[in-house]
Image 1 (tube, helix red, strand yellow):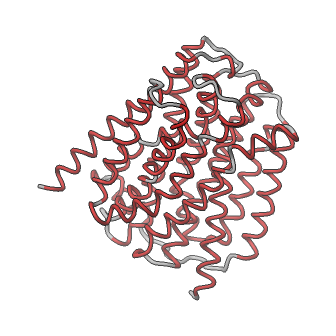
Image 2 (cartoon, helix red, strand yellow):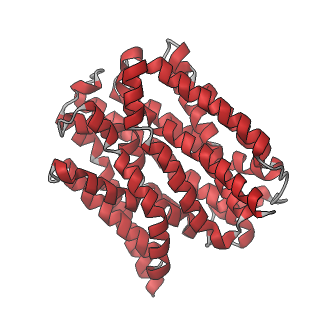
Image 3 (spheres, rainbow, N blue to C red):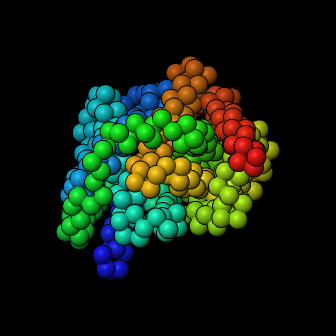
Length: 401
């Protein structure tokens, strides 16, 4: 494959990843509009947010097989349109069950974004450049998350909820068309003849599973806080205005943009497991201090930026998991690792939303939630980080023996 084709494939897959990242954080900014329109409480909002991760995770292996069989050119445009279709119930439905189904559909479509990135990088750049190119893709994707905060909030204030969703859907249709016409045809490359055997082999690998489950326990700061609950927490606990509260969690994504390339270099110096352990410890201490209000408001951007840098551990974890299997299974292992890690997004949203709902006694207006309710729900994050840090510390000790 020539270099221009390789870079064009990578760019289009990365732009799809950026688009779905923006949609992933949209509920954080649009939370009050969604809860008011459909008359739902924090528990139901948690289920809505978690449905994305459930759909995203469960479809990973089938999407990976489809990408191997038919190539990115045929698969990515179709899954972009699935994302678009999944947003439509927020505008056209009056019954809450359809937005839930739609949110799961957005997750299903979005799963092809990161798997498409995995596929394209391995096809076009090879395993030696996988971690570095993946970190660049994640950086581009996180620009979508950053622009899903403050700018989306401003647009919502100017044109309204329904029009914002319509704009996001139109962008998806345009991206699908461009992707179909510009991606080169690479059908069938990398197809495995023993897919089921390879899947079983990866799922029986205890080392891979340990790395992935512990990494899953560390997604709370990104997928629980920054994606959904961060804006509401800052408005109520830190008494910030809506615009600042919507923009500040984006600092986490900005930190992760920087963290991807930095952590890939750090991991080369001190090894992957120690790097991930350090990330877990940093995030755990930062979130405990955040919930206890030990961090002055003026220092919150710096704290969130540090948390964002540490959130890039996911890149290291996925790449490291793929080194624990034969080379023929590395692509599949990357998909399974991401699937397991992202499944914890649903777990976090279900636990956080459920805890906040119980503590707030079913309060529908998100702006009326109490400090105690939000802190109680978000305590899940530092507790899970503490467990993961201990686990990675044990793995690091085993590696030194």
